[in-house]
Picture 1 (tube, rainbow, N blue to C red):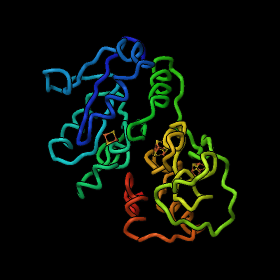
Picture 2: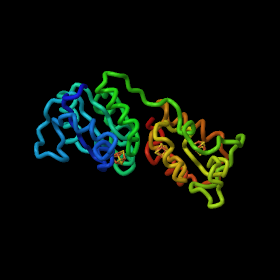
Picture 3: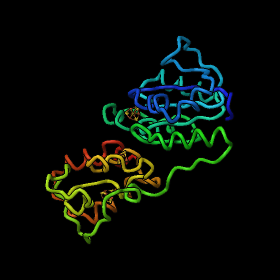
Length: 246
Ligand code: SF4
Ligand code: SF4
Ligand code: SF4
């Protein structure tokens, strides 16, 4: 895509957090508003799918009409990007709707940008690569790599008793050193460890750095001595990605 090429923005089942991450960002505004929008039913009257150079799709596929729309978009747009964790993996929508599908389960995608919502930095890097003809790659490192807390000091088995950090937790220590579960080790980086900056452990919204979440998670859990109710643990680790699906 170059400046002046047309793009389409499609929202399936989900919230407006993903499109907002693109359109409300002060950093991205000049870039975003320089690209003519061919199709954006959320803000325009027209429901007719028009051809575009790039389609950005957020949300999961829950209805037959969404599946049909997605297929029409795929046919009429040169490049298709799944934006946000609902589109990429099913995300929180797939927790509520058993039959929800991720976009790559329905059509071929050219790029995925996970996150709930996707980090502005990654969206910006993708758009800049598009307009400059450069290459965009998702980070292959995990959240721990960009975490401001001290690296984990304990050796396995690491005891885990909390899903919320205890009050006495030292501001600079790794959550796992304080028996608090954090999915940073099995989650793709790129968000700047924003939750950890705010004192909240990573819940894994960017998904796994490599394809198999389930096997990475199983390896990670095997080094922990977990003293938590199984249902609470499963809720925590499958907030964004259903275990067994990936
Ligand atoms: S990924 Fe998050 S922000 Fe995006 S549609 Fe799903 S719930 Fe909303
Ligand atoms: S486990 Fe969590 S708190 Fe510890 S280094 Fe990784 S991201 Fe940071
Ligand atoms: S720290 Fe984890 S949950 Fe928070 S934005 Fe980053 S990947 Fe998502």
